[in-house]
Length: 185
Image 1 (cartoon, one colour):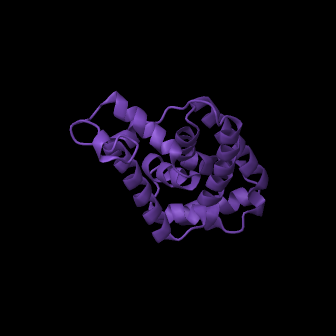
Image 2: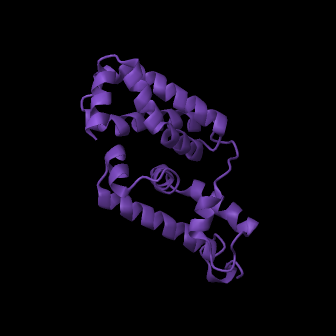
Image 3: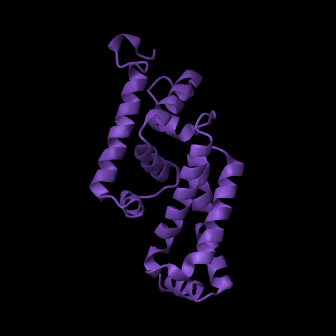
């Protein structure tokens, strides 16, 4: 941990080598997060590149060395939000990871269910989608998500739980909340 903090200190003082080392440590997580939020590998790569460029240009303003990871993810999150606004009407692909997380027993691999999961995911409020993406796709803990989104850790857990429950209920009821339209097992 101390070596990591020393890299941040050096990067804050203009060391490109130190910044490159930090970048190597977070690149995979940044890219994975951007792919799941933007649903387009090329856009994700662009967002990560812009994030790294902006972070390098402004790292001297970083107040706390411990905050580097959250700080760079906040920059990426803002880049992703801007890009999402640019193509709100574009169709997107959602990873099967979320489908598997919400799968109804007996329907594993069902293409119709996979499509429904994608639809229900994008119907969630933006903050709930962000929490799910950060946890399920980027592997962040509730504590890490809470710090990055400036929320209470319990709030993050409850929002994630409610969002998953809402999506699962929609799947079980065919999307309209009525018992009669359950997806067949």
